[in-house]
Length: 179
Ligand code: ADP
Image (cartoon, rainbow, N blue to C red):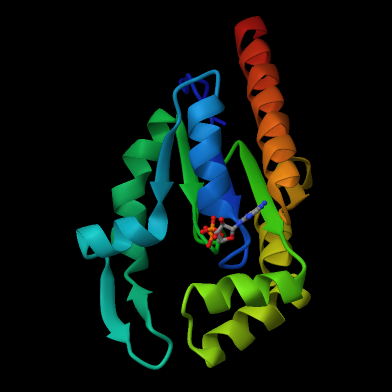
């Protein structure tokens, strides 16, 4: 964790539909330090950080080098929330906290159906959630003590999760002031 950072880098990850963007938006509003919400999927589209569009999966193949180059200065500066469905690509040194959102798979199915995802994509994500693919990925990519698994099934979860992250930020700030 570079000492120059005045605000942390918080990764919010999880299977699509678990609530990353909803959490990141609320956290950006409630955080005691300014945090910029970076929706990595949107950034990839906006800046063309991808190779080709995969019609079958209806998604972009990300150009990982371009994406890392784009994010590096932001991560070094700190004060960002990285909202993406995968996190193993990010260098370990970037993250101060990695939040993995989880959701019951039947609820996730409904959310993805509402979003208009094709059946194949819903099934793939549903399986990934059952098999806790993103959680395992986070645990194998970062130090155990910075990875937090949080349920995201309803509004109460959303509010308590964000309140918990806010407390974590306050503790992170205090730590910084003391050292
Ligand atoms: P992601 O960014 O992980 O793909 P979103 O934040 O876009 O997920 O959420 C997907 C859908 O599920 C949205 O309609 C959102 O309102 C809903 N949702 C996500 N998390 C919660 C939650 N904790 N409580 C209620 N609704 C939620």
